[in-house]
Length: 246
Length: 325
Image 1 (spheres, one colour):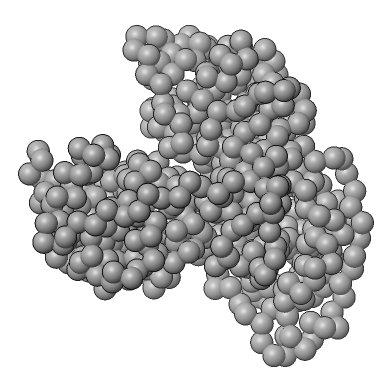
Image 2 (cartoon, chains in turn purple, blue):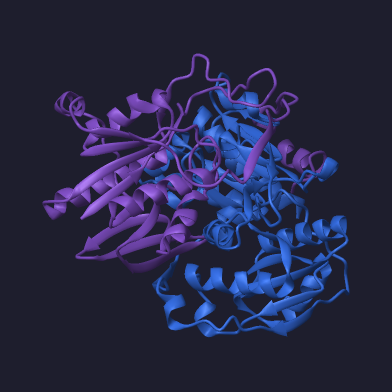
């Protein structure tokens, strides 16, 4: 079985967000980039399923410029077999989805996995676009994924519960916890990752359909109003009379 | 031309988030001099759908096919696309829910539409541009996004738009068939399992949330959280470390990699306020922090705070709510 895992390169989760002076771009200065945490679930689960099947391949795909390669190598160190980088700045979800669909079609992958969303753009869009571009089912967001032959059983989160869904390959799923325990690379993995193939391809497809005009930070809070613990009940009165939320 | 609003129903009722979406859609229609039509998905009653008139909807299309009761991506996408074609809708508005995001992304490709999710405000249409504000960087920032092209899809974040209530206005409910076939139900769920929610309030829909962290010391103490939640009509939630050690289920985990919430009131009990947790809650309108450590970073993001022991403070709060009557 051929797995394609799409990873995105995002600012570390502890990053304080700042923008360039014109507010058009995220300010990358001094920021460490990591594999999108949601994508780690997709990557680890693909590796686990490949191991359980005793064969197959896990290919990692990233749409990004050369500076994303350290994280692609990290994914290889975690256990992916090879990698493809589409050499482009990821402009919007539709642009990224077109690149993924093009690579997926070319490589005839059986299972396409990715994280639920990226922690920077939070689009939660790419999975559905890829599924529609390829004309195959999408299950999003998936909390559990098991395979038996060409049939997958997934648990899909819905508001207030879950759906158990069965689909045949090929399909797309976006992943979230508690799907698996994400793996971290070990020394052997780091050593072998250096020699695993990483292919760079040029982008295809139509123009993006959205553009960011401007970024902004949320307004600063006024400061906390402290209530003495012994008068805790006073808080409830403030929430009713002042904040008007109870 | 009409604005098409996708209304999600559950157990016959229109979801609260869909009332917000309907209000958003009818306001956009008004801006553009168009009408707002809805297409309903899920299990609905005609009476409840007619009430969408209060949110400014003039007509509701409803396909009573019983297999549409539960979410089926293929069938929902086809149904909504057919409704958009019928109504010649250039703008489609849906909820930024698991259903809305799943269908919206497929629809955007099928209808060659631009798509913005996580939208928190009505669009700005100055100078021929169509710009929406959306949450980005896990709630740590906002982005103004320009939607290109003739067709546009907007997924509205929950609790970011006030639902309209124009009493007495009703919408016309029209039966509608998208000619769905068995193939459209290929990804139909085999089973749907609903989880028990404290007080019956769903976390993603809640307008008040009481949340606990490691300071609660163990799952056996959660009744303190649940008592306060019940008293004020809130949903319960937890921080990531709490769901990681299985004190609480994953579907209660709020934060950067959990559920993002934006209620009117978020009460954090025994949560220090790691940046990843703040990312999931900082668009809440009012934040209350209860923590015995005065240096807890969460106090910087709070509107109200109590430096004290949650085991002492929580029962006092619950008692105070009961005294309000």
